Image: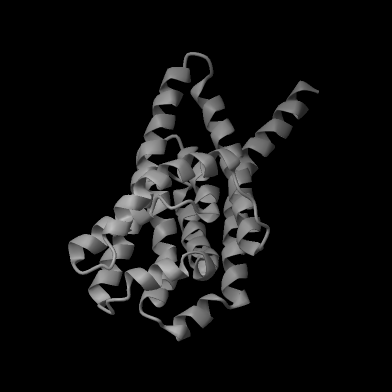
Length: 232
């Protein structure tokens, strides 16, 4: 967990800057859910959405953690750590490019999540219009499973930590970063929306993610070159 302190600010910033696309993708949904104009419903809905992101991170991280445990007989633990850091660093840099405007997606995640969401959608429709805090929490919990390219860009990096707790914390921080923009939609706050859409916010997030990605890649790359020099 010693390098998590560098990754978490990047994910928080990615959620803050990258969720600008949610104004177009999820704006109608947020406005519909918040049509009651009751602030507590909007807050509960979004907290439940972040909770579902955290659960997805925990579940996926636990699966990977169990897989790593069964693979220790094939590979040394240090080798698994090197592979994990390398892939995580690459994914964070790809996430930075995604926030910067380069759209990429993972087809397998999209297909799987779309099928799952098709089963959940009829349930979510019964909760609208939201008329209680319970409805808001249930709807937000289901909303977290909505297919979203930005979420799919973060999930692999979180899962590859090989630690369920760290994966959950990473998804929580990312979800927390999306909170201002989603609250702004639910409460119709144009001032917050304009701030989040500023280019400076986006490039700040991109910079943090690239720094975190390069930091993760530094150790594997330096050890690789160190080994090649020692062989010579």
